[in-house]
Amino acid sequence: MEIISIIVLFASFFFLLMLKVPVAYSIGIATTLSLLLNIDKMPGLTTIAQRMTTGIDSFALLAIPFFVLAGEIMKQGGIANRLINFAKSLVASLPGGLAYVNVLASMLFGAISGSAVAATSAIGSIMTDRMEEEGYPREFSASVNITSSTTGLLIPPSNILIVYALASGGAASVAALFIAGYLPGVLLGLALIGYIVFVAVKRKFIRGQRATLKEIWLHFRKAFFSLLMLVIVVGGIVAGVFTATEASVIAVLYAAILALVYKNITFKSFPNILLNSAKTTAVVMFLICTSMAMSWLFSFESIPELMSGFLLEQFSSKFAIFLVINLTLLIVGTFMDMTPAVLIFTPIFLPVVMALGMDPVHFGIVLVLNLCIGLCTPPVGTILFVGSGIAKVSVSQVVKPLLPFLFIMILVLMLITYIPEISMWLPRLFGL
Image (cartoon, rainbow, N blue to C red):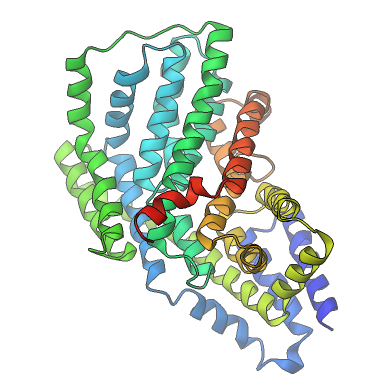
């Protein structure tokens, strides 16, 4: 009966996805159908509602709506422009300088807002036109914007790392994950810049005007308080001054005060900001609800144990097992959103990698980077469609220049997978 239940679960889930049923509904319906086969072992279908409710009954998850709200305030509060101008003053004079600006600004804004979609939208809407004026093809600009915006999901604060901490059952703390994401996020950004250097020299992209030290200092001063938010939020968590949830509330207050001081928004702007944040939060939390119900069903059907036993029996080396897991997650990322993917596949693969000696924090970074790549690929890649829409080019036009960037991201993924110290050095340094 267990095998039949598992087959029904996965077959119905993928069938519904092919019919373009929203992911959250696909998860909920597939879980219900599988549960019906075990109705004699269950209290009833109320089990699903119970698991959905208890799945989000977590203090840590309160951080998500607050970080979403903070990101929305920053998006409309003029912070993106200040970060772009600061990044431009640093690197615009280099060959392909505006493309570097795109990457650096996406890293900074993505890290501060914790949202890849917000970074893609905010930075892309400004940088694409600027880059076109200096001879950059719009599809190339879109590719840079799409891939670089994912760095903000690794560099804290990051909502998806909070979700992973929940899915890991306490095996990985939010503070450790936040610190672990810094070096991989920076490494990914530098790798993308490295490829841009090659393209810039080959295509002879023009250089921008070199900024004076006075201009750099001026733009740094304007961006200083925006950058300070990273220090306050992450520093406070690591120092134990406040939890990630409390940090998210501080981020909202700080972002609101900053945006009002910059005079890019007024008090009349807040109802619309709150409404947009509520819509985003509702989608995310519903995904978490249904995903937690499916994760519970996985445990009930002993799927993690079955998967662990299968991989350990079929493959004799850690290298091969990690490679199989990476390939699986890369495929999953092409058709599934990050939040449900983290909640569904963490309980499946985490026991396997822990049995092989991989730290849960290290696996969290590997998992998130895997799914970041999926955000940039068709057919479901959210950032791909947002970035293409912002740049006003078709997805088919973006795919060709995007491929080398995806290859770079996969290379970085392999480095992070097989060199644990890239992720673990900072957490160990801080004793996390």
